Image (tube, rainbow, N blue to C red; front, side):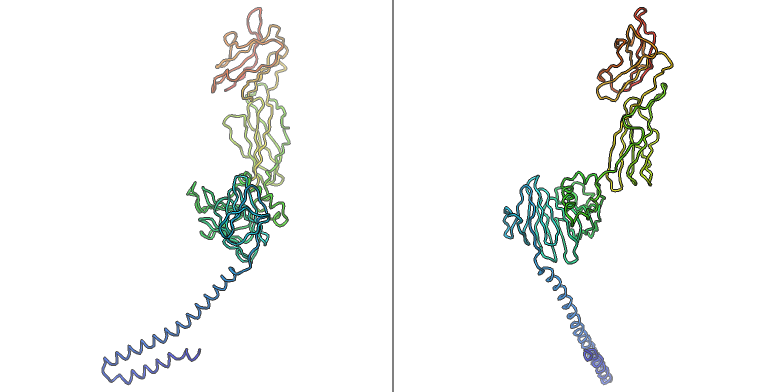
Length: 470
């Protein structure tokens, strides 16, 4: 190698000597000789560089070919169809779709498909990984060795539960996407609307677009329904996931197996936070002064630490959820005073944990005015919570009504007897129900009950006035 390296310097020395001898000769001859010598020098260097480059390239090519050969010539990975539900078929290497035998063995260029809305299948690999197919799903093994598992998904939903391995590559491809994993749980989707992946445990790579998808994320490789989402990532919503029957079935499969039950990742926590009411007790009656115009309630309780909480009066038209502060140390909360109409008022509390699990709790209180016991008269209350009926109740305080009572109501305030009389009531009766269809929607009515005096044909004592908007 050293002799070859010094050869150009010797040649160059000879050229210089030759040039000196020819210096005194014709200038054209000198020029021709010089050019010839330079070309000779360049040619020698080119030959030497070519030999060296070819050696390096051949070595690199040999190395790459060796790596490819090692992957493709690795021992076959054993695979079997271990679970069938509904109609399941497999395709052999000749392209024929056949009914599988029990624990049907699968090889490279074999396919599996599920037919019908109630079909499912599980394929177990020798390394412990599982490939689970939802209804109307089809896959094909394009490579199935101990070094490389490559799956082509031609449609449907595939849950990939991949055992971690540094010696095996796991790839699943749809038409416009390719996902690679070494040890994760993820679902690949190839539907008429989109091609996407949801990662439930670990991380995967989408190699076509060089995207990294982490646990709790979804990557949309292509969306026909909403093209603006193509190549976008978004956070998974646990409440939406819990409504996916196929994902929940896979979670159950993982939870029942020792090798997977501690690797549930994003699906580890699917239970909503608890909500406990300490005061006032649900269903209790809360009294207010007789001149109060609206009821209020202050609810105290406890939920999961770190959760967020809202409360809303469902009986108040047009109300919205109100944020409630949750104590970071013990999860206790105090809603403060929340307004609501008199009668049976419903309040909805919604707690959301850090993962996104939600719990909704409805609690009802009877909000009522206190009876004016120190005075004589009639106390009227109206319950507007029923969808179809308006429920009236009243009490006589320090008086009797031997001639009975009259119900008065009108759209304007201060209804009067006899112009606004609507019904005659026996003196012993204390409740009355009226169909809401009797009233105009969107209008406000004013109600009064009065004691009737037959001898004078008048109402001598009137109740409090109650205002109801329909």
